[in-house]
Image (cartoon, rainbow, N blue to C red; front, top):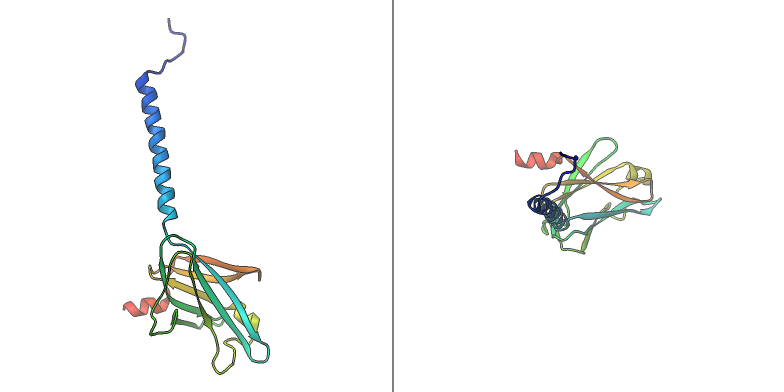
Length: 164
């Protein structure tokens, strides 16, 4: 007679342990891969004076384990105007950022004048950073507290026009 109790054989236990070990190895491999990618953090600040206008400074830090280059900066004004620039000076090309390093750029007016007339205009403007992998990030203010970085699934219009 059978009393409903099943006994596991040694091969069943060994197969179950092998399955658990392979899942653990897969998880460790994924964590290692994820840790070894690039990751950036951005800080944006507004500076200037009410009489001359306001400028925006953007600092990009590599907090990941792989170096990354930032190639473009751009903005979209509240009225829909879109402009793209080389991240640094045109002759410098891209800005390569090693692990733990950072680079900064500014949207600054000429001749001591600000790039924006008001801080509200600067806050309403959307800023974008594009890396060497073609990924575009939007930099914005989070209720005036600190900057946020949001990865976008779009490419900038100026990048598309360059390839045509």
